[in-house]
Length: 193
Image 1 (cartoon, rainbow, N blue to C red):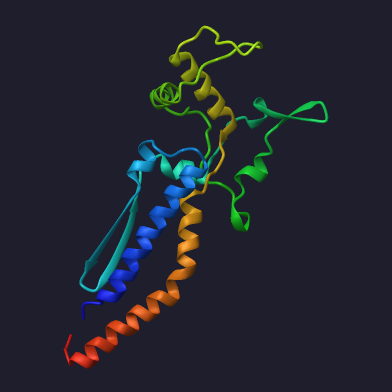
Image 2 (image 1 turned 135 degrees about the vertical axis):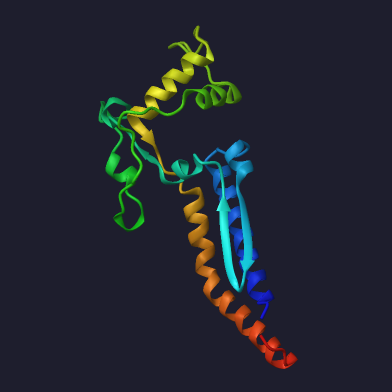
C-alpha cells in the first residue's frame, strides 16, 4: 500500500510548519539570516514508515528555546519606579506547562565570530549620551554582546515550537481522512499489499 494521501498531508504539514516558522522569525526581526534560510523539511518513506525531519542551523534550537544566563542580575533592562530591575528569569525561561529551560550558560560563552558578523550585518554601533557614534570597532561590539548574552542569556522566541504546535493541532483529522482515502482506494482498486 502506497499511502499517497497520507504522504501528501504530511508533506503539506511540513511545508506549513516551515512557512509559519519563517513568519515567526520575521516577527522577531530575525529573518534574512542563515537561520531563516536554513529552515527546511525532509519527508522520506521507508517500507511504509513516514519520517518527517525538520532541519535548521544548530543554533536555531537555542533561539527557539532560549538560554538561561549565567548571572541575569548583572544585566538591567528597565526602570521600575525609579530603580533598575534585572530581568525576571523565571518568567522568561519558563515555557508552556511550567517547564523550565534546559539550556544555560555556566562557564562557556557564546561564540564571538558570529556575533561580530551579526553586528556588522546590522550595522550596530556604540553611541554616547548625545546619540553620536563613539569610537569602537565591531570586535569590541562582539565582545560586549558576548558578555551580555553570557550574563543575561537568550530570551526564547519559540519561532519553531509555536509553528509546530499550531499546525499539529490541524493534523490528526486531516491525517485520519487521508488514511481513510488511501485504504478506500486500495479496496476499490482491488490491489493487494
